[in-house]
Structure formats: structure tokens, C-alpha cells
Figure (tube, rainbow, N blue to C red):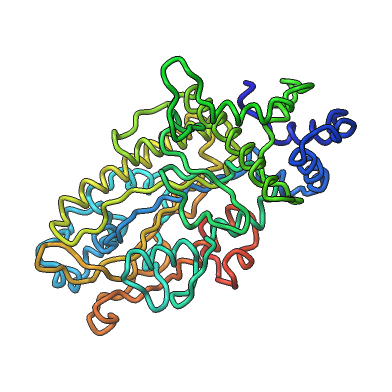
Length: 444
């Protein structure tokens, strides 16, 4: 399919074609720079590895709002748990048992099925030193992998892109939503944010009247018209379909032209794949279900994405937590289970890993409104056919004498989980990305 562009063949075409070598003097500056960058990157095998369509994929799932880990991965046999939560605590007969002391919330049947199939790792007691209870600040800490007393402008995934994805398609990172997550921020812009693929296209501030063309989109496309000459569909795409930031960038105009190219390619590819690739299973009719449904389509359609980012909000459960959590967990477990079934039907599940996170856990004791307030350590889930399934890490002590200001003390630094993902799944050194060495948590 012409829209399923092969980055490798595009680059080979551009590096070797007569058009690229003999006629480049007739081309705009940004195309000349592109040819130069492609030649410079020709020997960069890492670039080809990370953008290959058979490469491993990470899906980051944010549980926004600070999920209550105690009622997610439940220490149902612990007396301190039941004393701290006389009204919202889950009874032993209610939980989905994972061991003789730990169980899942009863709504997480999708996760229990994955656990029983050996496709779910449950990381217990995850947090960081000197935890911050602010949603915004703690989210930033998780997204930048910084210490709690440091402020970083680049995200951990942005640093991964910088270190490993030079010359890649901008679609090497795809965030489903209206905003690019801080986690994607890097020295060089990488990644795209997609809300609705049908709307993911060039649009001017003044919409065209009926029967008229959108002049903004037309101008962008005219910018690239020269590039289609001489291109061969069998090469994997046209010259205009080159994407990725050139290393040898020049003037600000070069950057703008480069961005126009990247955006056009991403827009065309995402909309084409989303409209043509079919899902193999039914998903929950929810925002998360729709997000994962789109991600499955983009994976099945061959988009050369290495990291997808989706989110599910609503976990700030200060009041009436029980019903809210039940609804959220039912959606979470069923959506992820449908996603894995879909990828399995595609034949892609072997190369996909899902990792969840939330910015913090909740206090150990319930509050007066049958909810929980901002706290500390919580849990993470790792999903995939190759994951180290079972209970990972150590459940924090709930003994009141072991708590810190009413919060759990973490047992696993979340950056150790990131290190495991980077080194064992994405196959890259974690230290340049995380800023220093963290002992990788074995996850696969």
C-alpha cells in the first residue's frame, strides 16, 4: 500500500537516486539539507533499528489523578489495611486473588485474565524519595524522571528520542490526545499528538467555504510539489514523504519547511492507516478504549512508532471512591485486555509492551468522605507476552510505625522500572536517558 511508507526504502531511494545527487542544486535549501543529513546518517545502524517496522514498541498508559494503589493491588490479608479503611476497604472474598495475601480489585477482571495467562507483571510499592503530593509537580517528576528537588525541561522519552532516534519519522512517538506530554519533550522535536485522525490535518484559522479549498493545506502541499517528480511508488514513497529532523539544519526557514514536511507526512499516514486498518476485537466504548483501538490500528498499519502514549483520567478520588474506582478499573482492564487480543490477532503482540503509571498513590487511611487523599507509593502494571509475569518488588509495610506521615514508603524507585524498560525492552542504555544509573528492574 503506497501509504505504508518504508522509511528504509525512502532513505535508500533518496541517498542513491540521481535526483538526489545530480539535481539537488535545483532544490530548495531544506531538501538539500535533507539529502546531506541522509548521507550522514547512512551508516547509522541504530537509526534503522529503532525505526524498523519490526522493532519493539512501548505503550505508556497514564492513570491520571493519583491512583489509590492500596485498593488496586489489595493487601487483603493485612489487618492494618482493614483498620485503616473500615468503609472502603475490600474484603478478602471480594478481591481477585494473586497470592495468599495480595489480590486485584474485583473490577480488574481483564488484568486478572492477563495475570493468569502469564502476561501481567505487577510492580508493588513504586515511588521516589521525598514524594510530592501536588498533581502537577509529581506528574512532572514522573514525566521527566527527575529528583523531586530538580526541575527538568525535557522528558525521559524525549531524551530517549534524542539519544536513539535521530532522523526518525516524527511518528516515532505518538500521543493520543490533544496535548503532547512533557515526557516527549526533547532537544529536538519528536512525536505527534493525535486526537481524532479524521481531524488530524492542516487547517487554517478561517475554514474554507463550501466548494473552496483550504488554502493552508494547499500551500503546504505546493511547497512539496517539486519533490514528487521522479519518485517511484515502488520505492516506498515520494521524496515529499521524507520525515524526521535533518541533523544539519540551517536557518529558521529551514526548520519551518522541515516542520511542514513532517506534519504533512504524519497527517497523511495517520489518517490513511486509521481509515483503512480494521480492529479484530470489540473495545469498551470509552475514551481509553478508543485510544487503544487507534493505537492498535496504527501498529497494524505499520506506522514506524516506537512509543505510544495514552491516558485515562479520573483517579483523584477524594469522595465516594468505591463506585468511581470500580468504573475506572472495569474500563482499564477491559480496554487493555481488548488491546492485547487485538494485537495478538494481528500477530504483533510479541513486540508490544504496555506500562502504566500514576503520579502518586493515596494516603493509607480513608477520609471522612469515603475517599482517599493524596499520598505516596503505588503500583505499576507491565503487560505483554514477554514480560516477567507475577508480583514484582515488595509490598510496603502498612504498620503505622513504618509509615511516613501517614503514607507508604516506596520500595521500588520508578526510575528503576524505566531503566528496565529502556535496557531490556527498548534495548538502549538507560543512564544517558535517566541522567544516572538506576538498577534496572527485571521486567522481561
